[in-house]
Image (cartoon, rainbow, N blue to C red):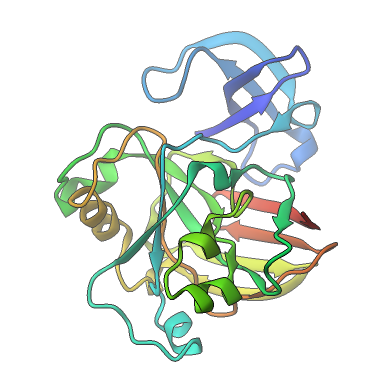
Length: 261
């Protein structure tokens, strides 16, 4: 099931289920509105729109976004860094979250803003101290994410809060896929249609169940919270006027224009 959050032609914001074949073109898909939220039983309202007639929003509004650093060996190597023995976690604020086709805004005080395409996990309930073998059961599903980073600020500050916390620095979408095996998914990032990152989640140093369990032993995760699983090698700079697209097999593609702030 693909769960989207959208603004409808009738006004207001709703969650809905995206209907249509997985390989159908965007124009052939529809979205059926559901009552309330997707963190419980799904009840349809009876309202339905063609997907091109609605505006897709960030699929969730998390209380927090937990990032994972250096979780692909080749990404650690491209920065001359060691692979961490345990997941290296950091936080992005909820105000960094934007949706599909929303603009990543480049802050004036950074000259090196970079894309980082990732698989994102969406938490489905209140989760604390979950064992690894039960971790996948705590997830609502999966979406595409872009851990946008001001690399010059990251280097200058010696820690990551400012570099990764700017408004618009966490695109998510286009929707949440609830039925998916995250063990070996293809991940690709394109900049203006040119392939820049290509890897598979099978190459994650710390896999999805490990990440969920580890984070839940540090902090309580709430419904809609997001864990970014890490980015592979190939990260690079984005500039005003470009478009960055992150594709994860079984989910879809998240595209965002890049604009000066």
